[in-house]
Length: 150
Image (tube, rainbow, N blue to C red; front, side, top):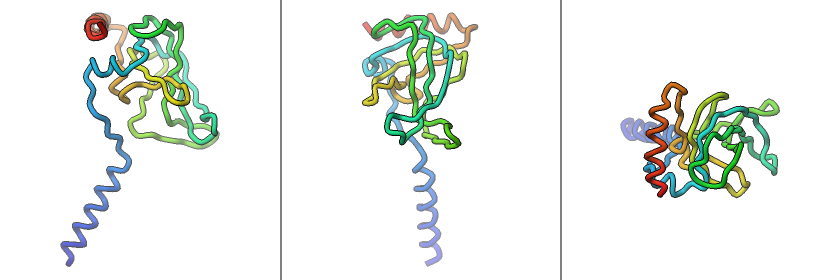
């Protein structure tokens, strides 16, 4: 009987741990590109948090100064919106939501949402971070991506 109770407690604990996880199917570069309306390279220049239109959820918005659009319509800036953030003394965390840093150089794969926010496609799979020193890596990645997009 003690062993059965121990197993039940263990199962309950494991289930509770998994409730906070976000499981996402692994996408290859071709799938990411096909499922994205916009693919852009740029630098994060500004971030802020705001409520959604119904004042139910907090979103963190990150503005990208676009250097190059690899797929989709041309933009000088794009605002990427990811769920979660801190606003009005409240915090909302979404496991697996993509986070950005001011000044970060990225290539992002974006999809439109029902709220007409641009979100990173495939969760963190759709964000590629490049340091300024890694220009060779960035050029090679963009060349590979152009091949996939064709």
